[in-house]
Length: 347
Image (cartoon, rainbow, N blue to C red; front, top):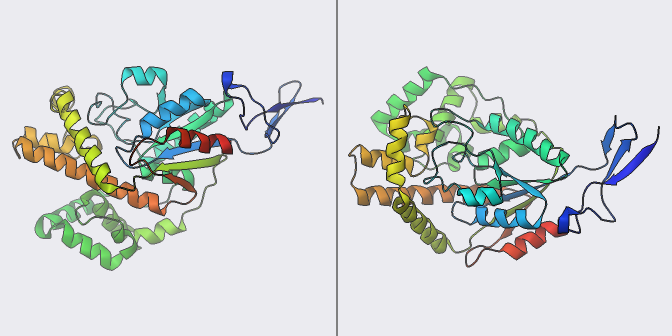
């Protein structure tokens, strides 16, 4: 059976997305088109960083320079009608650089890491099949972890156990429950803030249901190797004060753009409450409390900025522990040329 050869990777000439390289992976295709064998895994680019680090701007520029398709790795951007508070790319940006996994569910729905992994893998296969490169962009570190390492077999949520934990939290407070978690699962507790109610609740729930610390169960999970050659880069501001300034400015811009009106419209259109993941997104919870009269405007604004800073802190903690990442400082200016050169040299 005759075989023809075709270059598949190492894009060295970007004009018109032409393909040429001396060390390319080959496609081995039979003349009747019934069999394709890829000699090496295709590349996939990973661009991450804390909130307000400039990931979207860099990704859009990458799409103009490289044959990439963007896959959003953001647990907030999946929701329809939540545009301002999620810093969703505007229509012009999405027209210039379409994003997969944006606006795919209503705010009343939930979207899990398992569903993200399944969706992302399907999209990556399609993108690669079209001769393009998957570009995974975002700051939801749990999604990146699920994609790269696979999923665990943690017990499903148990409403009765969660209710019992919530009742205890009302009695003694989440910091006290964090201290209890530190006693039974210090590895998990060490990466959580004492006020991170959602994650503390889940860690305690897993311990009660399984009889084992969550960290021990996660350590047992199988490392599912991806059929891709991952090239990862993180935008990491070395000056925390500059990042905090950006966070404050961006939250103020969201308020000026109509974040409060957006939450009002969401409450009118959908049956929502603060237990839903969509309304636990940073900014939305704070505006919700403001609309309910639980705080004044100034307090809402300060709480929103503080919550965003805490999110950035958690993201930076994840990023410092992630291996295989090129880290580039983005404190002063967006490192567009450096980022593009890094990926080009490794494709």
